[in-house]
Image 1: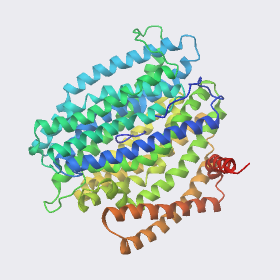
Image 2: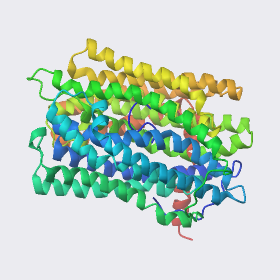
Image 3: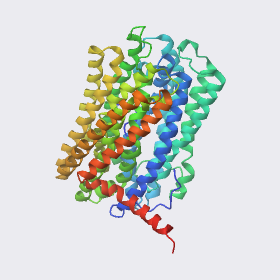
Image 4: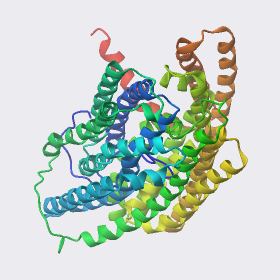
Length: 569
């Protein structure tokens, strides 16, 4: 990805079944996706509460907010280099293969032991390098802000080890088709953070935005809370390993373990993601410089913190649907690739792209139309200037959401074939678009629009990535069912445009005659969002988009079954 969190949690898992290709039925995939989506929904809801608490403590714009954003972003960026690709590319395919062999658990033990050791070493080195990392991601316009960000970073960078442990254990659970814990674990993180940030506000009050006003107590409570949440997120997975049939014990030594192939995949995956992060470094530096370049009269300028809040909103539909479905489908893709079932891979990819497209298109339309009220819901304590700054970035990012979903699905196919190398040229082109767009925005736009300009460049990069990946995969698979995928997306886009038109009209009416402030934002999101959703569903039904029946069929059958069970005998 070009930014933090490019690809995106626990019901109680049932007994894990051996992972397989044909054995991974549509029902199992839907159940797995539903469990993950429910966990992600709860986590994201709590994530919004966490964002509200954090904004109340440090604001959405200003020196303190941007300093904490840069510091807390560092372990997230490093985590995405690992879990967002390297671990995702290696663990599921490798574990799927391992558990088909007699020595599968020994292989997994060695893989986990090596991963834990590597994470510990990297976390120590990068914590010591915190001052350098901060200056890479932040434009040093303010010495006080850089000093505060560096102090925050010493507390936050050790999160890397626990993010990595969470990813390692979670991907092993996913490979055993125990999907729930990985998606529900962030709920624990958010609960710890909400409590900690609430304690910060109770002890120190909120709204301390100047970097020079922060003392050791404030820093320790805020950053320590963020790190404690990540620690809890990792540790909560441990009890679920044995229930999933994983009995881990420390084993060291790579010779004869067959990890050399995994190392090759990891190397190319890391290279590709590191290239993407170079683009994001440019975005982060541009965002860091924006507030300092603004006129003093412009008090609320989007910087790194505003980018983070906008990205949280952008990632919500992606996390609820794309990540949940793609993660559930990935196990099937890995097994199909291992069995040289090209037709199966093609069918799974096509189905995933079409279903994800139905969600991401209406989600994009909803975020564009409702950017202002949705942002107000997340930042209820912030002035209108901060809400406006974040909402502009939300719109810029949201237009690229459907392409982001398609790109994420295509990535899973490369990972299933353990061919991260083929993605590198695409990732280079995407990074160039992101970096070039951010720098162009800085050169030609007012500083108040720099971060929104970077958001537009990210959206363009996702379109480029999705198209290039489909062309590349077509050469590998012979066909990617492009006609069906494009037809579904075209029809969904028409329905989405109709929904957006209805939404704009309804929003204008409610802004004129409805209540203001937070109550108005809630009412607008519910009423306008509902009207858009009904319009979209009606449009899809009118155009006979069969993927809609595929999605609603199981729900309707369940509802009919419940009604039938309530009838008197």
